[in-house]
Every structure is written in C-alpha cells, then in structure tokens.
Image (cartoon, rainbow, N blue to C red):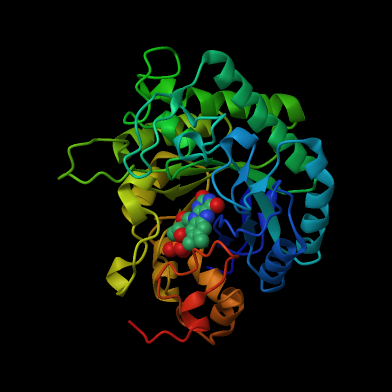
Length: 367
Ligand SMILES: Cc1cc2nc3c(=O)[nH]c(=O)nc-3n(C[C@H](O)[C@H](O)[C@H](O)COP(=O)(O)O)c2cc1C
C-alpha cells in the first residue's frame, strides 16, 4: 500500500512517500539554487522518494524569510532550476517547487517592513508588519503566478503554495492575523480569496488546467484552549479545503502552527503515540474533499504509515526531518531493512550553515 502508485492530477507518483518542503540554507545569497541543493534532491530521487518538495522559495525578495533561502522571482531562475530538475528526473521521482511569500515572518530591513493582511504584532519576533494595500495584494497574486510559470518552464512537475506555518498565505486564512474588513478579510471565503485568485491566475497564465497545484495548508494556528488568543481552527480549515478543491487545487498537505505557537509544526516525538500529530485534522479534511490528502508531522514508523493510509487519514505520507537523517529511508522500509525512521526529532537539523543531521553527526547520547 505504501508502495502503490498514486496520481496528483495527471501526474503519476511511484509510491506514497513525499519529502516535505525543507529549507536547506544552501541557495546563493540571491536565491539561486546551488550544486549542493541538487545533490540533496538527486540523492532523494535515487533513493525512491516518490515526490520531492523543495525548500520554500520566495516569489518576491520582499517576502524572503531566511538567509540562503531559494528564490524564484525572475526568469533568470528558470535555467539553474532546470538543471536541478533534470538531475531528479534521471530517476523515477517527481519534484515540485514550494512557493512562498514570508508575510509577517519576512526579514525586515531599514527600507522594507514585513507585509501582512493586517498590522498584528508577531510576539515571537516583535515585528509589526505593515497592512498590505490592495495594489500590493494584486501584485503578490501576479508574483505567485509568475513563480509557477517559471517553475513549469524549468520542468518542475508541479508547485506547492505554502499556506502554512505563519507565512503570508496562512496569515490571510487566519482570523488572528487577518483582521481586514474589505473583500480580503472577514468571512472564510474572503480570507481564502487571495489563494483562489492565485490559482485562477496560474491556470490562466499557463493555459493548463492539469498542471499540478498543491497546497500546504495550516489546519490550525496552534493556540491551545488555554490561550488568550484564537486563530485558525480545523472547522474553518475544512471549509477552506473545500473552497481550494473547487478552485482547482490538486492535493492538500495538512500541517499546522505559526512562529508564535513555537514548535507546533516540528514537535518532539518520543513515543509511537505522539506520531502523526495532525492525523485527526487530516482525516477531517480527507472526509471533506476528493483530492489526495498528504499528512506531515512526526510520522516515523512503518506501522503508523500503513495505518494512516488504511484508515483513510491520508493518501500520502510526508516527512522532513527523517529524510535529513536518512535520505535512503524509503528504500530501507521497502526492503524491510528498517521498521522506523531513526530521526529523534531533536531539531538540531535547523542549521543555518547548511542543513544536516547534527544529532548522529555529533554522536549526542540518545535522549
Ligand atoms: C530544517 C527544516 C526546514 C523546514 N523548512 C520548511 C519549508 O521550507 N517549508 C515548509 O513548508 N515546511 C518546512 N519545514 C517543516 C517540514 O516540512 C514539516 O512540516 C515538519 O518538519 C514536520 O514534519 P517531520 O516531523 O517529518 O519533520 C521545515 C522543517 C525543518 C526541520
């Protein structure tokens, strides 16, 4: 079952494994992909990861969130990305580009403040973003569509819109970060409008109704019941997922959390019970839509992966940290050489000198 093929739109993927988008800190300063990034993706492809999603790639320099982050903001990016894609396509793996605008989690400078639907101060960073004007929203829709056009021209098998983890598109869908009273805020339809308009514009620009467009979607902002704040919750997300399906999204990856709710999206897994922490939300979304649902977040054992697919929590299993530690995990699971990822979810892989598993590298004693 984990090794059965599946289709996203017309794209056939050899198995149910996805390398979830993972920022590697390995792009050039201007966002261009490097040889080292290609090495990582080619290695994952050689090791039979069905679908690889790149690290988040900014569609406009104003929406850059991290050093050495990948970009896709001019046509000059098409050529270097096409080399990277062709390395993956030497194998039977598919690759999608994750495209993002950082929103209130963008890097700020003396000249540029962060942009967001509303000027809600981020308590994690202390940054108060500027409320976007209507022309800035319309320009951002164009920026995303142009990024998708470039991705397709470079040979990517699809794109993923990053609508999770507190970046711009997740700022729009959340009632906590979107307090607008115009057509871009308020009701669920209004909060989702920017994503729907991006999808329409991509389809219009590409003249292609089948090019795979996927979304990584926050199912919750992660403020617990004890918090004095309330953000996006699963009831809203179910409606958002339905709107996205109707507007032509071909698959949804279910995640959660924003900077202010800390490690919600990268939780610690120290027991099998803690695995797949968004599985209930994924199941609720899967019940509401007819497109493939991809589950990410703390999936580690083959037993759990099989259970998630057979119990209809998800159609595909997505992992980030385990593939940093073991790029050959899929092959090991397939051959029966391993029953679970050895990743200990320590988060030491957040390494701004270039992504790597620093846990096993430094031989830190087991927790
Ligand atoms: C180092 C690192 C970088 C990440 N970068 C991204 C990213 O660029 N885009 C994204 O959507 N998620 C990113 N994530 C989140 C992962 O895709 C994933 O949602 C999260 O780590 C939970 O999955 P896991 O338990 O399999 O690691 C990153 C995670 C890590 C550890």
